[in-house]
Image (cartoon, rainbow, N blue to C red; front, side):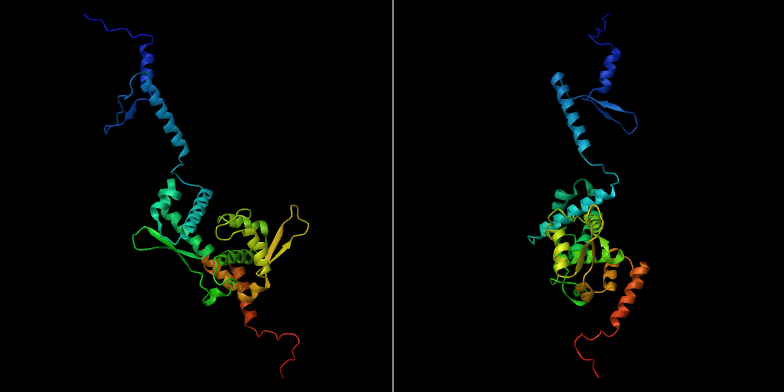
Length: 297
């Protein structure tokens, strides 16, 4: 009777362990629920090294790939800001933007929430930049941006440059000032604008130098007042409405803009709504005659 060959160098228990942890083997679970092992495709020492290399590469890819689970608010805001920037850059050539390009260059591993990202990006384009994101044709999966900042009707009062995209940024800042009691710290403004992808120290595709635009250009145009807050360390500044804003728009119009951005009713802010109503009543009164003229008889 033939004898079984003896195992060389390793015990049967050790061989079983090697078999269990061999990186060249793939465990399958059939419909019956019992795990099976697919035979290794590796041959000899070189095959084991190749299998080890493949396993380590797969592990690195798994670590590099973002989780498909719930994202944090910061992750979503960053991804939306990235999508907005991409759409603005693509629109400069006035060529329809393909959904496949958006998915490839921006969305990546966020494909599972792409509709939500596109909706949030469209809202930001509308209310901050004055562009409407529309699909070129039904089910075409191509998009274009339409400039909605036409100087018509009641939205025209606050336009210093006849419908430039900077108008949206100005309205955001005016809304922040009004909602904060007619005065706001500059640091608070930037805390909010950073969430929209607008930074004081970074050049912006649409706004250029945002800090210069807000603290110099809008101030020079008299839309804003910019003052240093005394006895602050580090030094801080505050922003208020300028005289031109009070002439060209009203608290009620700005409150309606804020409500539109948040998809709410102006009455949802009772204190600001009452203040805006009082402002409307004051505006309805006859304006005083300019000084230096004799009163009419």
